[in-house]
Length: 97
Length: 133
Image 1 (cartoon, chains in turn purple, red):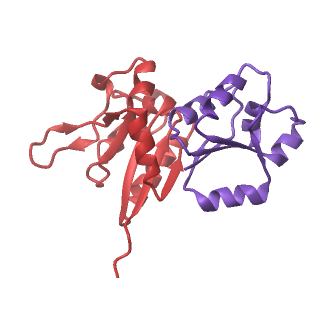
Image 2 (cartoon, rainbow over the protein chains, first blue to last red; image 1 turned 90 degrees about the horizontal axis):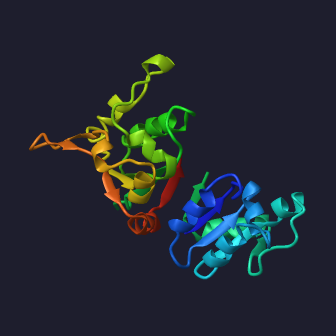
């Protein structure tokens, strides 16, 4: 499964819910305001670090750049639009809107 | 050659009435029920509020949909699930759930099935498509 999250974790519990319904090996892709979760040194970094023990976490490059986010939690993979398409090709997707 | 029946899941995570999502989602489910697909619906997060019985939208001036929910089984939508943790953390119990139809033989009312997040995750992994509302 591929799970996309597009909400900021500082305003919304969508990322927490996504992680609760994620099985080991599933991939989580942060897009739009979801990429704020990828920053290192925030109140939500530990949540991401914990999730990364069983799931790959990707963040969409265009959304990171647009928000000037460069200091990311170690292990977060930066994915461009082509990578996004590849992930969608490889998995059934659930959008946590 | 018979094609494999598509497994399609609807997830509902938004509360009812504050936006049109739950209502529109219900419309889509009823339309999809006309096709030969294996449909399931899962209510989680604030979506569980859509399954609370006794909703009265008269003073809001909108139609409401509790009666439509009562016909889900008639539309052969029987796989209706609710996440236990979302339900309990919002102060709801199984007693609060609305009726989605009645048993063909016994005429006993049918309510949504309460499941764990692990069971939902396992069901999600089996789907061809998942549509979120």
